[in-house]
Length: 248
Image 1 (spheres, rainbow, N blue to C red):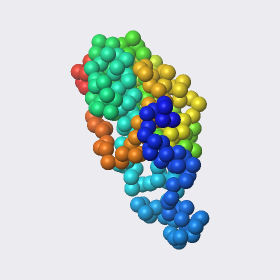
Image 2 (cartoon, one colour):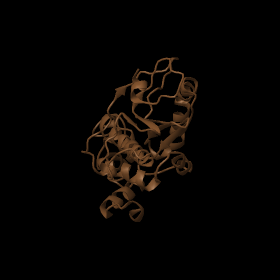
Image 3 (tube, helix red, strand yellow):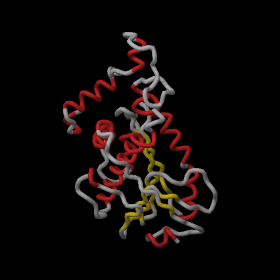
Image 4 (cartoon, rainbow, N blue to C red):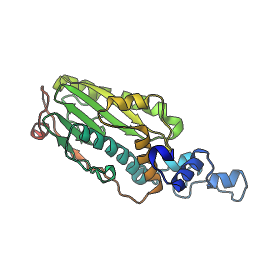
């Protein structure tokens, strides 16, 4: 892993221990050496403090650490897409701050937009929407669930954004593809991920995205970066070609 992603030895050791369920936690202490009678999570006090609970299921850190991990992986994909389309961005992926709209004469890349549609739908705010001026589109949504929930989460993402895909086709005459990007915590992936990343234009590699997710696990104090902007897209029947058209 270290050769692929450049992880430090200490970080690799921590991730390996996490994947092997070998980290010390209250559930382990209560059930193995019996040094405590309370297996509950010391943060949420609701569930047993297992490795799976800590990395992906604790309600107390769902809005902070988990959200930041998710946003950093999505930002890495956004950075790669911008580089592919020659949209000005930083060379260093860690310094990339996605703009709500990144565009040039080839593409519009929407980051965390609320898509306004003619028909009311439940899910209209994916992580990324890429609208190529050649009548191509991508709907990309990232998830970082526990390793055992990867397949279910991928299926959920596909079902969630079917209505939005149909609305984009109906309003803008663009056949958008759904690309769920699901990386397990910590670092498991399914067999479809590599194929899905090939559908996303740019140099998106599993080791790099995994490193982004792992880095946040070991640097929990870094801030989240998820600007939320609303966009109105009312009654449009053509491909949006500019930021002005997207906001009208």
